[in-house]
Length: 179
Image (cartoon, rainbow, N blue to C red):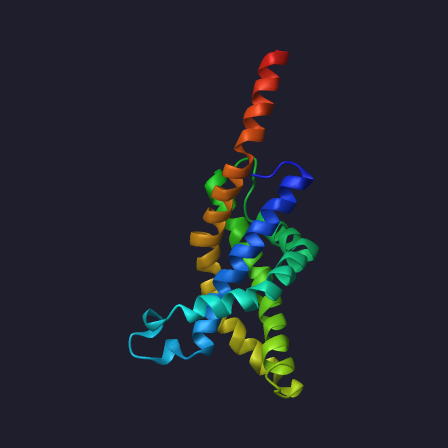
């Protein structure tokens, strides 16, 4: 896990990218009607991934900004009310922190997406925002939680470990030489 400010920024960028892209694939597939077809999302075509890249390109900076402004901190605060990182299993702590971060970030990003895609780009009345937001949140929350726990989180931790394993090895060697 990240130890320095630089490492936290890199970790946050990777997590923002994996969450934004995964959720955009899901939402683009929904908006293209795949969820309503017989066979559901298994009817997706590759165009979904291309469209999701375009939308993810401007949603990713929002995820990064909101998670760093309040999402990560508030998620950790809620999580640490439920688990103790010094006493509880690291796996349990990771799962609870991830779930609590989704608890904060999913409403944040669902509201942002509702405003951007339905009000600004979709031309719907701002008076409908509460209903649009609730519908978007209901659709996105289960996917955001599962995507974070089973895909984005593990992928991010794996990539982070690969990127920074050489730094850790150098630090360990330097500590060994100083001993």
